[in-house]
Length: 268
Image (cartoon, rainbow, N blue to C red; front, side):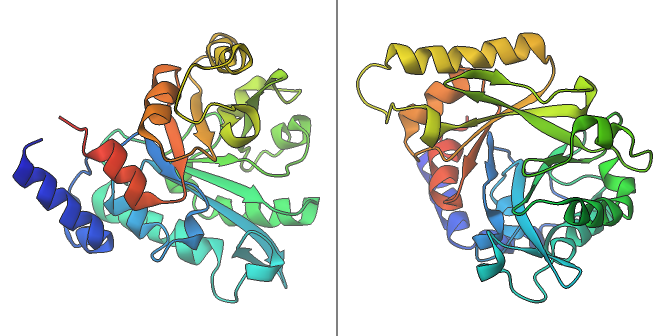
């Protein structure tokens, strides 16, 4: 990328949501997704404009509404999971036929911040109205939805004939944790970097960190074809490079502009 292209890209970072005016133009993608995306100035829209390949939305159920937020304290009326994410994603698919580009699935991880069947069922009922874009765990759609918070056992999800939803396995210091049950319902492998990796971008990785990262290879053997993500990752170029080299597909970021600059400016 030449100096002038870099200047244009940096200007683009300053007003990312404006790029969505370019109707149905495939995005130049970066290997990242927006973690806790609902806290950004323009939920979903900034991530799309900057070439992120997915977003994460947390929710709680308040008076029957699925409100985005890390908990009830920051869940605001009107900021619903449907309004901020599902409806605009469907509009984009209806208009373009895809989210970020043809034959490129878009990741939507949804975390229920509480627990209980009622909130899970309410989400399932909502997702059935968007089946045209999300498909289901066995037949994914343009938008791939994964449950990364509380969910019932896989046997109960498998019995949901309307809309079985995919969940995640986890890589940690203790190894690979896989929910018991039908493994076709496991579509994602997750690594919480802050909790499990000590390396902060300088020096040599410890043996413990190396063993933890080796679990990614184990996950790929045991759960082939699954998407691998890492989140709570320091925005450090050397860490990003290490994770991508270790087999991580998407890096979770809470600072979209910084991550886009670190990953995007290195595009050829």
